[in-house]
Image 1 (tube, protein in one colour):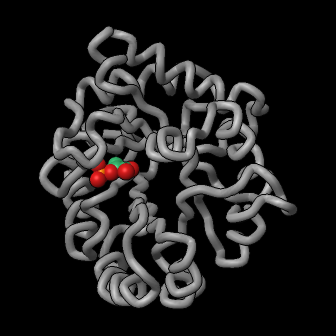
Image 2 (cartoon, protein in one colour):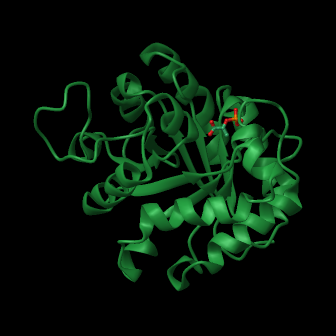
Length: 251
Ligand code: PEP
C-alpha cells in the first residue's frame, strides 16, 4: 500500500450538461464527505459545466475541480481554446493533459503537451499528465520505453521543483473504455519505471486509468507505486464513483 495520499479524478469526457453536473454534485458531495480527509477527489466536467460545478461545490469543498485540457497559450487569437487563467476563475485545481483521446483526435504532440504542462504549472494548476501505450506497442514489448519517452518529452524541460508538482496517470490506450483493465502487476511495473525516471517523481501521485471500476480499484491500490485512479466511465454516476473510491481505500 502506498504511503502517499490517494487521489481519484473523474474524467467525464464529453458527458453531462450543466444541469446534469449540478445533480451529480448534489448526490456526490454527501458521499464524498464521508470519505477520509486524506483522500484527494476531483471531477473533470466539460468546460461548459465548470461554472455549474464550481457553484455547486462551493469553496472549501471536499471535491476539487479539474479540467480536461487547456491551451498552452495565455491569451490571444486561438479560436476555441481556453487559457489556464480562465480555468483559475472557477478554482480549477487540476488539468488533465496528454489524454490519449486528445493525442489521437486533436493530434496533440508531445511538444504541445509539454508546453501545456508548463503553462499549467505557471498558473498554479496541477497538471495530470496522461501517458500510455497502444496494444501494438505493448505486444512488441515496448510499453515501458514508450511511456518513459512520453514522460521525458512532456517534462524534460521542467526544473526538479516543477517536476515534483505534477501528477502522472498511466493509462494504457487498450484499457480505456474497453472493460479490459490492465493487470495490476503490469501497471505497477510501468508506475515503478515512471517514478524511477526522475528523483522529483519520488513522491508525486501516480494514478492508474483504464476501465477502473469499483470491483478492481482496490487491487491497484495495493501496488506500491500506484496512488489512485483516473476514472472515466465509472465516475459518471455519483454512487459508482463514491463506491469505487471507498472500496479502493478500504484495505
Ligand atoms: C479515461 O478516459 O481516462 C479512462 C480511464 O476511461 P475509462 O475509465 O472509462 O476506461
